[in-house]
Length: 401
Image (tube, rainbow, N blue to C red; front, side, top):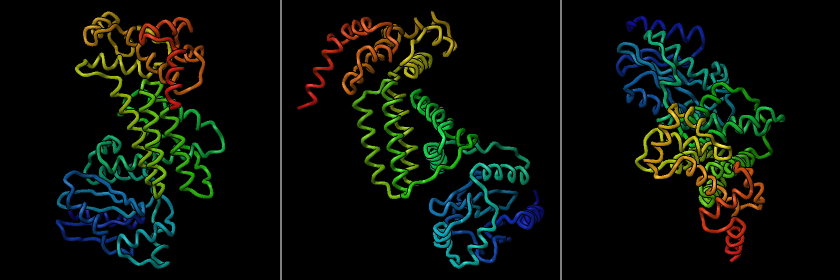
């Protein structure tokens, strides 16, 4: 698009939809269309525009939640924004005024409130549309903005945090149960990339009601975060084979960090980090050094289905290789058979349950899909040289000192 056409395009865009923007040719601003109170973009936004080498791009203020998008067309560069995901409240307005040095009076607040609202997903859709209209290139913003950048991770963590807060606070249980089970299953799989994709997709596609906050939103957010950490540790990480001591230690660490958090945004970021941390540790515990992709996939599958009766046919179907190939490859790389590895991983989980819970041997045997309590006891004694009951008595006696 020629520079003259770009100027006309930007002017019409502002006049038609009230979207604030700034147009530069080189480093000279040739159009300021952001209302009477913001003649120039914030300094940090302008600096980011001229640092960028790839367009489109975006940035979001962590304080005011103001959203800015960056485009290039010929020798021109464009800043779109500020746009806000919701009606600007007094706190966001104060933060925005401090960021920009703009007036903090009522007329300025009214102007910002008149700007069309764009939640995160509509904001990304707008970026895609404007980039196409300027360059003719069609992009999928969810692919273009990968999870590798800290800005995207922060945004995803914020969205994911809102989802978990909303569903746990919603009056009904329909969305809560199924979302949480899916979330725990993704963590238990030990596949960080799939977990991040799930969080992003659920934030993009799942429409959940906003829950009512308690009298203290910060306290409520902390309670929800602590509850989630306990669920992830006890219902996902430990069943996936993570050492119980390690799981409980992580729960304690994230609980302490949560209590020190000063605001809800910190808690959302911490929550996102916590989920990925558990998932990554599960992943690492499920693989050993120098194993092939196929063997790692077998280990991942076993870790994700440790509570179930795991069939070699199901593993082969999941890995898309024959049973004979997997049996031979797994034994040659690990030194043990797949069935022996399954039993070993189940017994590691059983040790944790014996030490840290009061569940009966019958329950533990059924929970881990052993064929009977007797078979479970025999396997346990063969692996560790001690019966499950005696192991429990020794560990519980030791813990009293």
